Image 1 (cartoon, one colour):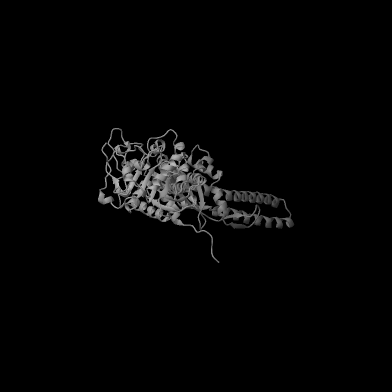
Image 2 (cartoon, helix red, strand yellow):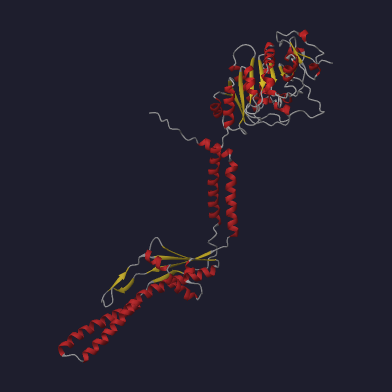
Amino acid sequence: MTNTQPTIDLHQYWDVFRARKLMVIVPLLAVIALAAAYLVLQKPQYTAQAKVLVNPLLSPVAAGSTSAKSNLPDMNTEQATAASAPVANLARTTLKVSNNGDRLLNHLNVSAASSGNVLQFQYTSANPQQAAQYVNAFAQAYITYRNDSVLKLLTAGVAERKHTIALLQQQLQHSGTAQRAVLVSQLRDDEIQLATFQSDQSLVDGGQVIGIAVPPSAPSSPKIATTLIIAAVIGLVLGIILALLREGMDRRIKSPGEMESALHAPVLGVIPKFKVRSPDASLVVISEPRSPASEAYQMAAIALENMLPRPGAQVVMIVSPKSGGGASTATANLGATLAQAERQVILVSADLRNPTLHLILGLSNGRGVSTAVREGKSAERLLKATRVPNLFLLNAGPEPEDPAALLSSPATAQVFQDLQALKPHFILVDAPAALSAPDAMILSRYVDGTVVTWNSEAFRAPDLLAARERLSRAGANILGGIYSFASGKARERASTPGAEPPRPRVPGPRETRGTAVSGIDENSLDPADPALRERSEVWSPRYGVQGRVQS
C-alpha cells in the first residue's frame, strides 16, 4: 500500500533559516547581551560545603523500660531536621549574630548523599570566610540538636530511676520480713536500669563532621559559562520560533512553483537579481550577454516562442500586478533576445502614465501611441529603430489627460492593426500595472496573450491573485509568468533636462538587408513628417531601417 502522507523536507527549513538569518541572529545576540549584562551587574557569591556522617542513636524505648534499641536514621527526616528553625537558632547562638534563624536558612542548602548516611551542608554568602564559618556552625548545631533530642530522654529516665530507688529505700526501712524481700528485688532492678541509662548517656553520638568547610577560592555564582550557554539556547530557540512565525505570516510567493499554482499558468523564466546602475543597463541581454540574468531571459524567450506556434504577428502583452514588477525590463530583454534570433520585433510602450521602455532602450520618448491615436498618425511612421537589429519601438508619446479613455477608443485598435499589417514576428506590449490602472485590461482586447511578471521580493500573493482575477474577467489569455528576484525597471521618468539622449547604433544595409517586411510602400514615407526629425531611425521595407532624416 502506498504511503500518501507528506514527508518533511529539511532543506525547506534550512532555506527558511538561511533566508531569515537576521531574525534568528538578532534574538540570539540580544539574549546573550542581556545575560552578559546580568553577569556584570550580579555580585559574586561563594558557597562553602561541610559533610556530616549521621550515626544511629541508642535510646530507651519508653520511660521505665529496661531495654534500648538502635534508631537507624531516616535521611529524609534528618535532612528536614538539619534545615529546621531549632537547628538554625542553635547555629545563631554559636555564631553570636543578631539575624534570626529563618534569615540564615535562606542561604543554607542541605541535601542527602546518594549513598551512605551523609548530609551535605552548603551555605552561600558574598564573603567566602563567612560562608565557611556559617556552614561549619550549622553542621555542628545539627549534631548538637540530634544528641540533645536523645539525651533528654536518657536524662529523664535517670531521674525517674533515682526517684524510684529513693522511694524503695524508704519503704525498706519500715517493711516487714515478707515485704522486704519484694522491695529488695525491685530495688535491684531499678539500680540496673539506672546504670544502663547512665552508660547510654556516655554512648550518645548523633554524628560526626567528616568534611570541614574551608573558604572557597572561586565564586559559585554567577556561573558565566552556564549562564551564557543557557542564554544562547534560549535566544536560538526564540529566533527559530520568530523565523518560523514570520515565514508562516509571509504572504510573498517564494518559489516559481507557488507562482504557477497562483497564476494557473506555467512560469516561462526565473530571472535572478542583477544590478541596474542606469536605465539602459536594464537591457542585460545586450550589456551582459553571458550573465545569468541574460541567459534566463533567453530561456524565457524560447518558452514564449514555443507557446505561440500560430503563424503571423504574435501580439503579447507583458504586465505586472503592481509597479516595480519589471514589466518594462522584461519587455525590452525579451524583444532584444527574439531580435537577435533574426525575428522582427516591435515593442509598444503602452504605459502612457509613466513610460520607461524608451529609457531602457536608450531613446527619447517623443511621439508614439498617444500621437497615433489622437492625431491619426500612422504607427508605421512613428516606429524607431533601436541599437539592436530587428528591434523597433513605438513610444508611448505625450501623456494624455485620460489614458484609459484614449486606449479604449477605436483608433487604438487601428494602431495595432497597422502594426500587425507590417507582419513582424512579434509585437510585445509593455502595459502599466494591472492593479494600478484599468489600462492593462483594456489592452488585453488587442493582444493574443499575456505574460505576468512578478517581483518576488516586494509583492505579496494577494496581488497576483487579484491581478489574475482582473485579467481573466477582461478576457485576457494568460500564457505564463516571469518570476524575478528583484525589479530591474528603471525608476527615472525621463532623462535629465538638457542632456542629449544616448544615440542608438544605426545598423547598416548589410546588417539589415533581407529583413524587410512586406506590405509597406517605401515611397509613402514623408521626410517632412515631424516624427522623422527626431534622433532615431524609422522602419523601411527595403533595408529594415532608414537612416536619420535631416529636416
